[in-house]
Length: 377
Ligand code: PLP
Image (cartoon, rainbow, N blue to C red; front, side, top):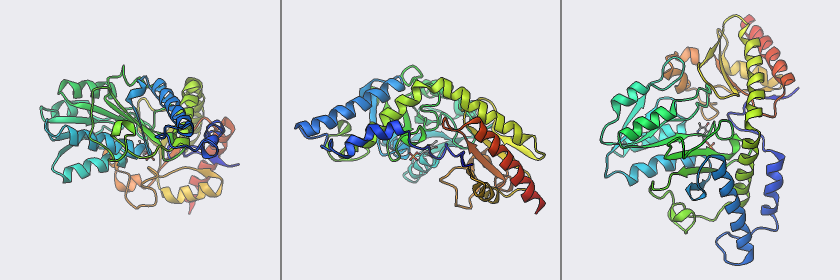
């Protein structure tokens, strides 16, 4: 049996998405900036995708900007606000568990002279709101806190963080890459100024994402070029990818509640089986997204476990995929107070709507056997 449990890294593309994209690789190839009917067909497709994304996240279509993925959306939100609002202040607050797309953007700003505060997290993996309250001030221009962490799945208190940011006169950005299509999002009602999402985390194409920018918020340009995306991000539209993004998010949101319940049941069943082994502990507590569990296996090398699981047809991940292959311990687990040695014994399993309960049970047995075998070595 082949069991893919790495949906937080990427998801397989839904065949309905592929089907919707196909015409735009073929006969509907026009440049959306052209006035002729070839171009206008592309414009209509992009407009439809924009409407779909907006409807799925409780936004107005004019507040949706297409990007080449989650990293680009995160970078644009952070760099764009920092540069455009520099006259108001130079202080940016983020958390110590952000994805590198946010963390490294903030580090780059620090090198440009901005002051960056990193919020600590508690042992459950939840960012400290008291620390946020104490560190915002009149020079704070942006608070960026992810909606759910990609390694532990722990949901962050974004409503509270947004209220604190706004109370200090700062803007609020959230990286919703792990929650779009998984949890209900109402960007407008949730008082969010900027929100990032990425197609390949909800069964859509890779290399396409979107940034929600609330009306009235004006980040600096991401790219300088043509008039696309109100001239903020010039460049010929990737029509097939944008169409795929819209359809993928729409499909995900349509069945989101049922899928979440089913995925959580599989994840919880798997977790129960594996936690029944001695010397296994879960990292992250409190509300989590339905698919993710991050487990520590005493005395087991994480990469060795991953290798053994892969041989048995089970795909999982050590920390985030972007950190996999590097020897650096997960900054998320370190921020939660764990040691580098502890972090090296952790594996993330992430379930998706295409998994079955049989797969979850098979994977749990494979994990149990692999852990016992590695400990016996
Ligand atoms: N933010 C989070 C929380 C993620 O999990 C990821 C992907 O792993 C990204 C941002 C980056 O998105 P993309 O792979 O589309 O650049």
